[in-house]
Amino acid sequence: MNTLTDAWSWLTDADHWSGADGIWHRLTEHLLLTVICLAVSCLIALPVALVLGHLGKGGALAVNISNVGRAVPTFAVLVLLLLTPLGRYGEGPTVVALVLFAVPPLLTNAYVGMRGVDRSIVQAARGMGMTGRQMLWRVEAPLALPMIVNGVRIAAVQLVATATIAALAGGGGLGRIITAGFNLASTPQVVAGAVLVAVFALLVEACFEVGERLAPGLARRKAAAT
Amino acid sequence: MTAPPDDCLARNEWICGDYLSTRRHILADAVLQHLELTALSVAIALLLAVPLALLARRFHTAAGPVLALTTVLYTIPSLAMFSLLLPLYGLSASLVVAGLVLYSLTLLVRNILAGLRAVPEETRQAAKGMGYGPVRLLLTVELPLALPAAMAGLRIATVSAVSLVTIGAIVGHGGLGNLIYTGMNTYFKAQVLTASVLCVVIAVAADLLLLGAQRLLTPWQRS
Image 1 (tube, rainbow over the protein chains, first blue to last red):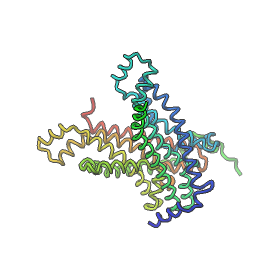
Image 2: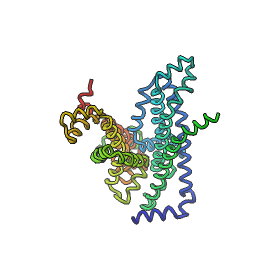
Image 3: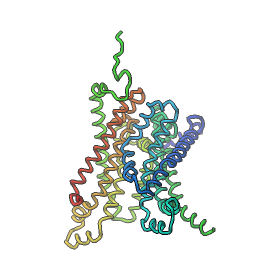
C-alpha cells in the first residue's frame, strides 16, 4: 500500500506536471501521436478495404494480415526501424511502427464488415439500377459501418499501447514516464506512469463505447428533423 | 596492436553468420527463456480461464462483470501492465508471467464461453436423456464441442504472448526481448534482427503446433 500512496503523491506533485518531461507534455505527445497515426492509418486502410470488400477480392490477404500483425512483436519492429536510417528522424520510427500496427485491424474489420452485408440487399440495390459507386457508398458502407467503427476502435487501443512501448525505443509519449521511472529505480514513478497510461487507454476505449451507443440515436433524430 | 578483424560483426551488418556461430549459446538460452515464459503463462491462464468461463455461463449475472473486467485488462497497454505489477512482484520473471496471464485470460475466457454457449440445446438434451450427469455432460459432450472455439482463442493468446514476452525486457526477463533491448542500446544490428526473426519463427511454430493439436483432438471436424 505504501507504493500506492507514494505513487499518488508523485502524481499530485505540481512539479511533475510541467516542463519538457512533465505529464502535460507527455500526454499531449501521446494524444498527438495517436490521433495523427489513427488518421493516417484510416486513410491508408479504409479505402483499400472498402474497394476490396465491394469487389469481393483479396479476402485472404485482408483477413490474414491481422494474424501476421499479431505474430510480429511491436517492440522488435520499433527497434529495427530505429536502427535503420529512419531512426535519425526523431519520432519517425514510432510513427511508422504505429501505422504498421494500426492498419491490420482496420483492414480486416472493414473488409469483413463489407462482405458481411446481406447479399440480397446488394442484389436489390443492383436491381434498382444503382451503379457500383452508389452501391458502395449508399448501401454497403453504411451497413458495414458498425464493423468499420469496431476496427477503428481496436486500432485506436492498439495505437495507444504501441505509443507506450515506443518509449522503450526512445520515442515520446506517456511511456517515457514509466521508462524514466525504471531508470531511476523509482517504483512510485513507474506505477504513477502506468496508472496514467492505463487511464488514458481506458478513456479512449470509453469514448468509442459512448460514441457507438449515442451515434445511432443522434443519426435517427437528425433524419427525423429533416 | 592488431587491426580489428574485418568481418560482418565488425561492419555491423544486419545479417551475420559469425553472429549466429559465436553467440549460439546466448541465443539458445534466450529462446529457451522465451518459450518457458510463454508456455507457463498460457498454461496458467488456461487453468484459470476454464473455471471462469464455466462460472460465467452457470451464473448469468457473473457473465457481465467477468467479460467487462477482462476487456478492461486487455485495454491496458502491456508496458503499463507490467509496471502496475511491479510493486507486487518486483523485478522478476513472475511479473512477466503474471502480466501475460492477465492478457491471455481475456482471450481464453471469451472464446471458451462463446464455444460453450454455441453447444446446441438439442445435443445437451439428448445427452441428458441418455442419463449423462452434469460432470459427464460437461467433460464428454460440452467441452469437446467447445474445443474449436477454445482452440482459436488459445492460438491467438499464444501468438500474442510470444510477442508480448519481449516487453519483459524492461525488467530484464524478456527472453529474446532482452537481446533486442541490449542490441538497441549498442546499435548491434545482427543481434536485433536475429532475435526479432526468432520471435516470429516461435510464434508461427507455436500457432502451427496448436493447429495440429486441434486437428488431432477434433477428428470429427476433418472432412
